[in-house]
Image (cartoon, rainbow, N blue to C red; front, top):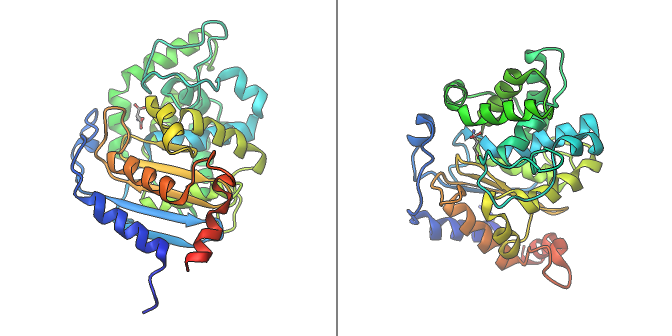
Amino acid sequence: MGKTHPFQAFLDRLYLKYQSLGEGKLASYIPELAKVNPDWFSICAVTVDGRVFEVGNADQLFTLQSISKVFVYGMALEEHGREKVLAKVGVEPTGDPFNSIIRLDEYSKRPDNPMVNAGAIATTSLIKGTDPADRLNRMLAMFRRYIGHDVYIDMSVFISERSTGHRNRAMAHLMRHFDMIDEKIDEALDLYFQQCSLMVNCRDLAVMAATLANKGVNPITGDRAVSAHCIRDILSVMYTCGMYNYAGQWAYQVGIPAKSGVSGGIIAIVPNQIGIAVFSPLLDAHGNSVRGIKVCEALSQHFELHMFDLPMGCSHFLQTLENEA
Ligand code: GLU
């Protein structure tokens, strides 16, 4: 057996340190999320040159939930271009909870950004296709490119999301009233509930994160998932709006683009270096994974990953990895 890579050893130590942290609550708005095992915990990281590091339940499936918003936003940018997308969804952080219904921009009537539910539904409504199945298949094909293998929807989560999603439905109708989405409201909502119900594991998330870190090319398969010119827009919105109404503190303390979801996943991207994913379903009051936040804080601090760590910011990470090997 070869020597454990120091980065792997670091992840192993973080895992052990935070495994016993039992703080937080499971999401409870649908039964499927309320009944998961609160002890599930995994940390995975994939470098842009395709090295995989993982610890914990890296194979445990869970639903993508809000993390899907990042990738569907990328798809909308790719299909329509920045200007058209900007006309429908802004890029302004809100400081409000993700499901806030009251905020459509006073003048433009756009939702504030694509990481809150209203903005995500508007983004999803832009996905092209001849009919609902075609739109779903095109969306699944996009996720497949990021993940590198076939993807499936958890039907019971989808049905629960759909049957309880009255708030999302209300937002969609309000946006229809202001002409921010077209008349296919139920189609857009179904597609949104489907993207939230996509099944992934923590390793998949890390590969998706690494694909964003690698300018849109999946570092394991070599397939392009999104055009390189979309990456800057995607990462900017993640940086300012990705962590619910904790986004400002996250930018301040951790300082790398990230997105979390209510099922307990977090992805964090160190551009041109590495994609990081943590999965642990116990959430804090903002809806972010408690262990996930701790792990990302520790990684950022130890490896000086904050975008504004001087003099080199995060651009030295791979070098550190080599030096330590
Ligand atoms: N399906 C959830 C909703 O739209 C997504 C929540 C989340 O992960 O933030 O309410």
